[in-house]
Length: 265
Image (cartoon, rainbow, N blue to C red; front, side, top):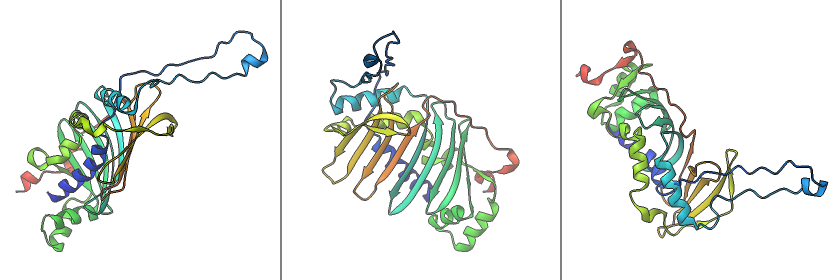
């Protein structure tokens, strides 16, 4: 359905900006010695070790992409504009196919769930009306669709799942990050930043088309990408990534709460 395409475009606007940063270095925990020393020594703080010391921005970006390849799960929150419309998503997914979260398109909301390789979607009334309209249905047909699916999950197996199933494919999303290595070349370092309480190095790339992409890479632990911001251009957006390698639980909804379009003819 057309809504699938728009949702995918929104997700990819966010995810595509992530194309290009990951690493495999671990942060070092440096502790000051607790020996008995003069007061002057005790009050002297030691500068934290920089895990990216001696690396330029492009090399840090390479490390970030490699680190992302090792992530077994993550939580991504995106806010972007595609086709002139503001879209948002909030998804937790893992590399085994579990996926759960929600999306907002044109002010309409839908919950997403993928369990046992089957995708389910539960939208509010406005969402189904918008979806029906994009598929060429009349307003009356849209209302009928919204009534049929009110409070229920639509099963989106096989061809019905379309690109939404790809959105919940963590392996494919991470693979896309490394598809075009030129996307993370020619970057520069910005001032270090704090992303949700985590120290991060800032990488900036100004594209010839006018957009500026800013990536924030974790300086502690694995150098995962914590945030990506694309400014300027027609499709600005922000993607925040967190909860790396945390379990994602996704359970299929009860059968009496599911509508299967294929059985409806």
